[in-house]
Amino acid sequence: EPSTGINGPAPNVPRWLTTSTRLLHEGQVVALPTETVYGLAANALAPAAVARIYQTKNRPADNPLIVHVASLAMLRSLLPGGEIPAVYEPLIRRHWPGPLTLLFPASPTVPAIVTCGLPTVAVRFPAHPVARAAIAYSGLPLAAPSANSSGKPSPTLALHVWDDLEGRVPLILDSGQCAWGIESTVVDGLRQPPAILRPGGVTLEQIRRVPGFEACQVYRKNFTDARLEQAPTTPGMKYRHYSPDAQVVLFERRTDDTDPAAEQDSALTEALRAALARHPGDPVGILTVYPRPASWQTQVGGATPAQIHFRAMADEGPTSDPTAAPYTKNLFRSFREFDKLRVRWILVEGSAETHEGLALMNRLQKAASTVVLYP
Ligand code: TXA
Ligand code: MG
Image (cartoon, rainbow, N blue to C red; front, side):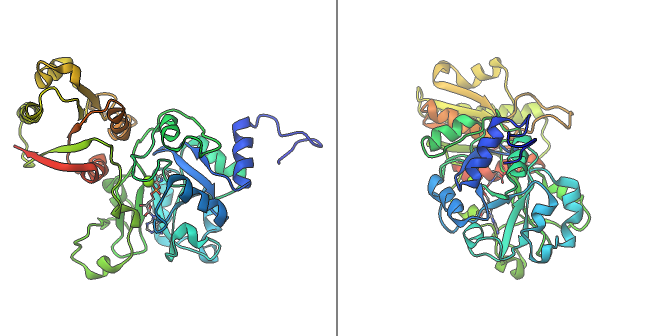
């Protein structure tokens, strides 16, 4: 332990930090906040510690983990020859620390249990001060998947970690609600053109503004380029993810016409009313992008509003403030709250697949059992 004077612990080091450091050095797992979702962290360089992560959240053994670092020196320690590929320099300068994960060639110092034997290692430099301090003070790169039990929506509150992993994690660092509420963007810049393997907190539009990434694509199964099709992708995306227990029905607009907002809105209102009429009286959750006024809720919910629970992904209506929380923030939280309310269906308003909407719709399309395209 770091010390001042002869023996005592350094002053001003909070107990959570000395405790998490001790546990991480002992090979235990620690649940901690990041700006995206809560992570279940362990020493990435100790295979037995990493094995605990898989056991704790019941994760399939073929789904590799992201390694979290708190400095570029720590990143270099994971790479062959300590070299950061030149292609990543502008991206790192612009978006680290932040909700962005990059694929690097893995050096032999990275245990195979982290990468599942892939030649690459996924690395992220998180912005959250608690995550950064836990990494920096322990001096350990931390492997950390989302701290949910496998198949559940990612946790965005410490309470969610508790709900999923109670009794299986010796320490949960509670730092309130995660700002993004959705996982990091996974980018493979080692392939040409670069590709987003998982859309997330940093948007495609933002990445394309970075030199060298202007042609960045979103990886989709039916790429036209055979070389892209063959290159390894993100194994985690094949699993059914982000699913609440209730059936999710996603309402997407049928066209991208630029209808007046009011007209579009009445089409959604009608589609939701028709869905509710199918099983009157059943408990239903309705999740909209932005909060809706009580008058709209009454219009949709009709005579049995007690059975209908409204939530919004964003805390407040659209704003031009670039520092405002994104509307992905309450997505997973709402799923979990609806499950606690034991709703049978969750009816969700979709959004355009631009900016944060790309990551949002990626998660919603995975969670949905039915998509309704409304006029
Ligand atoms: O925001 C996040 O990324 C959160 C926080 C805790 O950092 N972590 C997270 O981890 O979402 P996880 O394990 O739930 O998702 C990691 C994704 C998976 O889809 C996995 O397959 C992919 O990253 N991945 C990890 N290593 C990879 C590699 N070498 N090549 C391709 N994909 C990889
Ligand atoms: Mg996950």
